[in-house]
Length: 242
Image 1 (cartoon, rainbow, N blue to C red):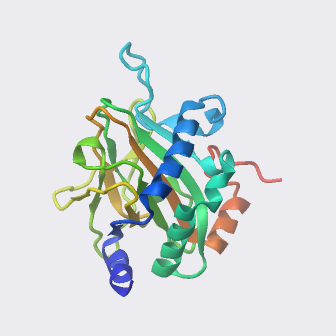
Image 2: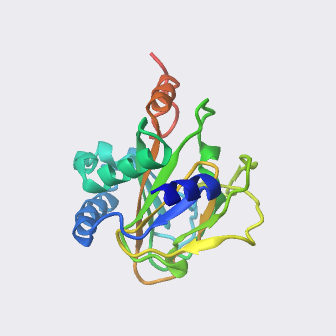
């Protein structure tokens, strides 16, 4: 664990070959696919990170994001993946780490739409305690051609770079030197952890099968409380405080 912790703090990300078993993966896939198919129930939490595309050959979502799926499928919170990931977050960054929000990101078959280089912190409000850990769990075998994660190892004092929205909406992106980027293929049940300042990217899915990822985001309990006080719950626009 000490090696993993040191590596995470130094370079901003780590790989864990097997966070959960294949049986646990199958349980998550069943819940995941049900939510993907239920567009009515997930409409208020759902978006296409690829942005708008009204062309005739774009009748499917290319990069489906569903924020906080556990608010709909509440059995997720008790799932072993959530418990194991939380323990890793505590071991990496401290015992005050808790789940802030979860999300699903699915890359549909044959869509070949990359998720551009970005830092997660570019999406977040400023917080006095900047510790964070995002656990990216592969529910399919992931590799470069279907959209595995790529990371650029951090250097000391890595800032949040200027980010812009893609021209057609959707995800944020930034311009960066990716010459030192490394890809992280995973088997189902494997995961990566990265912090909010780590630059990361994934290629589009050029294969015939979907690429399902479940992401669990952790930060200190007091910072979660701070976010909620500011009306941030990660389900969309900031909520008005009462």
